[in-house]
Length: 322
Image 1: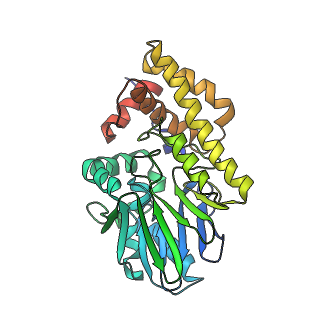
Image 2 (image 1 turned 180 degrees about the horizontal axis):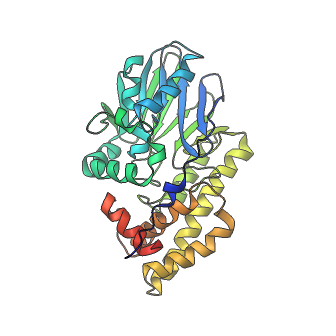
């Protein structure tokens, strides 16, 4: 009888402490010790939420904290990208005045192409992040408004720029930028003391996308995971750390693939190479098999990420960790 080694995330059961921190006059960060973050922009007449949490039940904690500081309607939800853990909580804002769910057209295209498979895959591999999953309505979370490249919203006198600065974590990545306050919400393009998940990534594009973020010279940054970053030095640390991880992982995988080594050998080498420096980062053991698998594909010329299904997750995990 063969034993099935479960995902590293199945051992991750510890509740995380949530922080809700004000970064500027209009910007707030909802963070949870390396669990997925939510950004909040409180404008003159409305609120925008960036990434919803994974279920409507979990979104209620975000709503509760917003309501401690404002009674303005939560009119807008922005999907920084399509991953289920970021978007399935959208329904939780419906009773708070939600009018539009906004995403890049590239993100909508990914939902059409792989949304159902991604939903099943993510819920299966990281159950703790989908608390009260039964509160998620049937079907997918669909944007009601899409854009390509750049979209500007005005929350009264507050300018909010939604920008596609390049591919990285996914092809649809969108950041929210407050130019008046120099605050940026990066989604999973930037992580801090947390391992970038790169199973749907574009490794060769990601460093330039980070450089494009840096060129805006943000003074505050809310990453996809990890503490909110304040001041130029912390922001630089977040950008540099993400860039180093992505670049080092791809360089290692690319070298192994060029030598004709099989995926498992490349995975074991790359894990051993990165573990001393990054092994203490949140979800390192969970992300590495997915990250190396995608990097190996990209190194071999598979331009776009293959779709992760619940079945493919299990087969990959067995092949690399079984």
